[in-house]
Amino acid sequence: MITELSEIQSTLQGLFTAHVPPLQVRKDNENVFEVAGTKEAMQGKQKVDGFYFGSVVPKPKDIRLYYFPIYTHVDEFSISAELKKCLKGKSCFHIKKLTPDLIEEIKAMIQKGVEVYLKEGLI
Image 1 (spheres, rainbow, N blue to C red):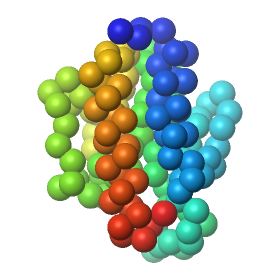
Image 2: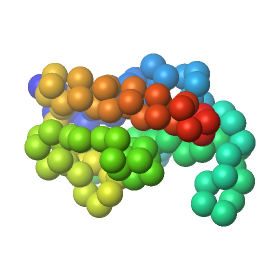
Image 3: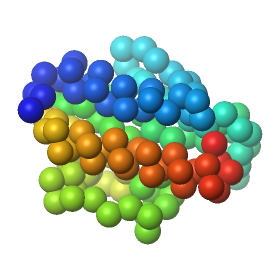
């Protein structure tokens, strides 16, 4: 089990980075790591250079994993009770520890999000 916040952060970033491309890293600094699509798309009423996909944001007590596909395509995802405990709001997970099972579930969730967004032409 991973409990060191910097290790959780790098693990989550690595799970996103595994999908570059078709995703692109839009921000990468000490405050935020963000990935998005590479195609122009409509996000709400605004045209963007890449549809937002997710981000990893370190906080003092946890690491925040923002994962947009679970918000835009909620019916496509079912998550375990362990991951659901981390969900605050509709698309933000507060991660304080990572078990091997949780890492595998997040990895599969990100993979499914990439597949859904590719199918929809968003990335």
